[in-house]
Length: 386
Image (cartoon, rainbow, N blue to C red; front, side):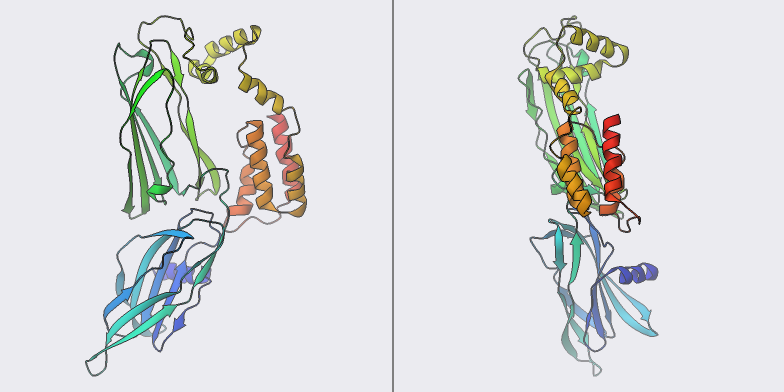
């Protein structure tokens, strides 16, 4: 505990105001958070007093969300040779915007026992601290977590449903180090060929020894209107892994629907949307997908989305100049935004080299010697080879 507090003193920029033999400080564990990332605060008081009553209110702000993560801790501790009464309150803070975010000042009102056995009151104030918050590193609603898991459960095999059988789909998303309202909204699974009923959403934050755990549960009852095979589209959302300091994508898999024994008239109904063909190919898997893809190309039926993506990868793209100018200026935030826009335009997943730029932007201690222009050249070379 003492070592952790000393490390926090080295990291925090907050000063403390002292009143006689009292001192209150705001300590924090992070010098380079992104929007929505949890910052652990410790409000620490050192009092050469016998405190009988106290009152402290953590300040609200439109710039952050917060939650107290543990009960207040009062204990004795020897500091510079003196045995003091120590107060600690643990707060998890989540910035809502980028830029400087100020926390505090915070006041602690104490009622203490005087030398003659009476009661007196004093107020100790901790000076504010300012966090330098980075923009969220993806064009998506901010969601940061130490760990995130998605559990996608089905009550039956969706490709072999019996007549009038209803499929129940239950998706549970859990994230360590965030709040429930920061998890994504319920995805829209509606399709013209699907009868769908949504159960009420369950959304909660649970405090654990490892930190706050956010959980959301979505549940649907699904049934195709007809027996023709179809694909329920995939969904995905981005989140920032605060341990590895890069953006991850959490997918919800596509689901192939059909009734057992319906036959082989795949795609016979116009109920099946063309946007599901790429997912159908993926669901078929292996050699069958390759064979079907060759057949579609031979008939001129390659989906337009796939054709457009291939054509775009042959073009330089509208973000080339923005990336070059940002690299020349060494504006890494602008370079990251332009690179993300370029990948979105090309309809291409992020290559591993993007993690090098993310480390420069979001790591607490970025590796030295980063050359933005050299990174951009390697990034563009990687895209050409993809």
